[in-house]
Length: 297
Image 1: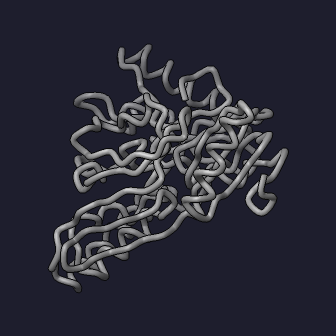
Image 2 (image 1 turned 45 degrees about the vertical axis):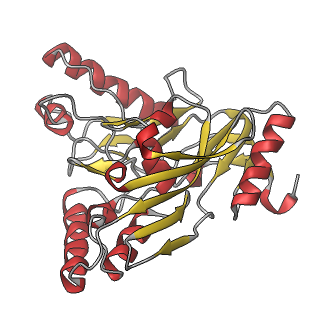
Image 3 (image 1 turned 180 degrees about the vertical axis):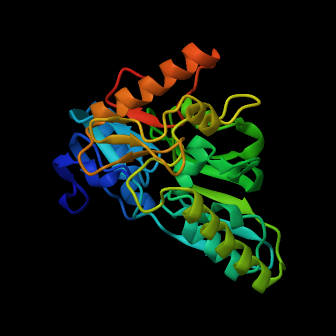
């Protein structure tokens, strides 16, 4: 394989925002769609399991040896914006804050909410990331993908995809997201859009432990409840397992106090689930994707 984009026995702990991770048998960071496509073909040719990560902001990787190939899309950052039509074409590794700020500067409305989410476009589509009722699915036109099993490249229209709260069709198919086409409302008020985007980021930093290693939100909000409120009602704010702690600032955040292992974090997730289930009869479902655990990834 092309050594410029390829490493063996690669430590992944700096590739997750919570700063834990295992060792990948093979690891690559493609800089282009061609390199990405080549890596998918290579993994198929060599019968290697291929797992794709973005910014690692919603990801828990077990501290074990991860067999197969791990591809990180963060260097696939091409972004094209047409301010007149509102059409945006972006590769999977474009960071959401970059996208949000670029939209505002081009007077495109509808992406202001995404400024505080430290994830990639590909990850956001895969997870249907969002805040409140807002998510990128609303602005999606189509997604370019490669089939992990057959190497076939396709462009899938939004109407042929299913999106739900923190769910997309990509969680259950063999397609890897390469890039996406989106549409945002053009001709917005420049000053107002930039100010709203700044305010959204300020609100995030004031209400969430933004400067500490975390996933972002750990659990999905169950119907008619807020996960954070349920956790807080259990008196779990500040509760620790090893180096993993439930944030005192926002109880749906787990932070890594510099020494947490993946086991600490996994155990803390389980403790929260058990407490809430026992006391409230509600099962909290993680938003976090897990690699190297028996839990569904």
